[in-house]
Amino acid sequence: METKPEVLALNGTTAVAFNVPTTTPLATTPIILENVDNTLLDMLKVRILSNSTLPLLTLFSSWNANPEKNLVHNLTLINWRSLHPYVIPVVFSNESSVINECNQASVITLPLPAVAADGIPVLKYMYRDVMNLFNTSFYAFSNGDILFTKELIHTLAQMIKSTTEDMRKPILIVGRRTNVENVTIDEGIDWQNITRISKSRGKLFTGLAEDFFITTPTYPWNEVPEVVIGRRAYDNWLVYNSRKMKNNVIDASNTILAVHQTTQAGNFEGHGHSNRDYNHNLLIKMYKNIKYYAGGLACVERFTQYKSKQFQIKTRKVHRSCSV
Image 1 (cartoon, rainbow, N blue to C red):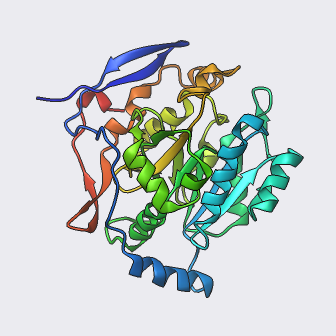
Image 2: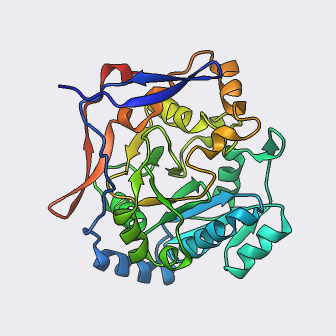
């Protein structure tokens, strides 16, 4: 019998629940990997440091100075910097305190290229700027409270190594996050500790919340509307539209651990902000009717996994309601 996970879609400005069946149920507990090929990563590290191959990823975000989020942002900077040399971390900001914080962590800062909705960064132009400045195999925006481990770099390395994927074509890699409350500095500065707390305190979040978007250089960001970060609707629209445009969309929830540092603001922080419906209003104006639920992870046909310690990209059957 088909499972029916409940997901949220926007109808007008009201959240409406849909029961979207899928023939491949999403996991409900954090998935931790013991399949990382350190030999592959060591070889890749040597090649990157000798400039004989590209770094894997330019990883960027943006946030405002907020005393209540100081620890969260500091841990993010430390964590992203620990992914060197595979990853180039970048933070977009015009605030001197954020820039100083990044300088102390040896993280590159760039000025905000464009803002909307009372000063919120427009996503597409940040992609444009990092793609113009940095030469890497992938580019990714992530929310500024997400911690990664070496599973991120291993998944991307395996993607490049894969014989089934055409890296010259547009690829969008997304995944599900694991919420962990009150991450301490000792817990957040070490990959093993991040993995440990995801096991002991972590809770997988809804498949309708996508916090990072990894794309290849050919992904058509120039065609994406001027949606802003940190406000709802843009994440599901990106996945929905990528599926509609026949781009290669891959759910990497099984092979990328993404830990969300949950604070008192909770797990739906973007829903309480001013201009919370900015993206939805913009998209509805342009496209009239949008099947947001078709942009959830339950509707993504392709996914990564390990089987007998072998990295695989597989295809699953999704319910007919996922059609675009």
